[in-house]
Image 1: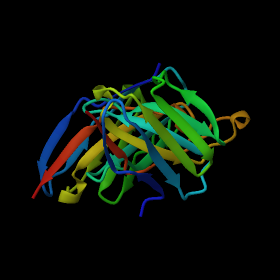
Image 2 (image 1 turned 120 degrees about the horizontal axis):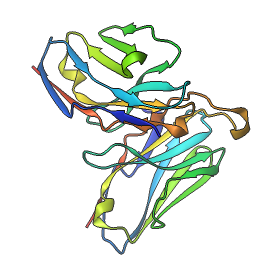
Image 3 (image 1 turned 30 degrees about the vertical axis):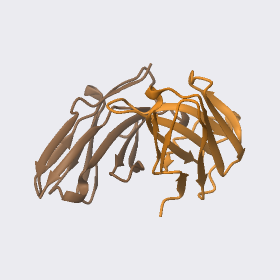
Length: 114
Length: 119
């Protein structure tokens, strides 16, 4: 069985601070995919990144970066110099190879204060 | 503008009503999904349609009835719901491979959801 844990239910930071959202996963599969989605107040989940289990390279995209560590089964997400527009619920998800098999974490509500 | 549109955005209904949620995707995808998002709970996959065929039904009560007339449209028919069914219902689509061609990673593209309140 797959499981995704986002232990941080809510985080508040002040604008321009860096913030890291934690994600820990459990799976018995050797091939799997990890995702992060952002859900702004409008409701739709927006895809941010996909990472497969064979690629442990960290990735940076603008102010966003992701740290994938298989040894600790973690896929953490860092926002550098946070902005008010980053306020949203962020979901980590795990799939063993198909979008229809995605398992989502319970989400982290990030509030960035001006 | 999102490639997946859902209507209505908000719906209030009594337990004896019959209503439907509609989802339309403009992305040329061949798989569509219904998810339920309740407060403080992970997203729950309800139904999956792949090439218009239902491939997943995650033990969803029969008061929820999906319909997929074509690969661009997905409905969720609601009948005699309970107050605990109040939630945000999210539709999603993906470009998924045919069942016999193995897995792919297909990320999901979501609509903005239909906020359902059952009185």
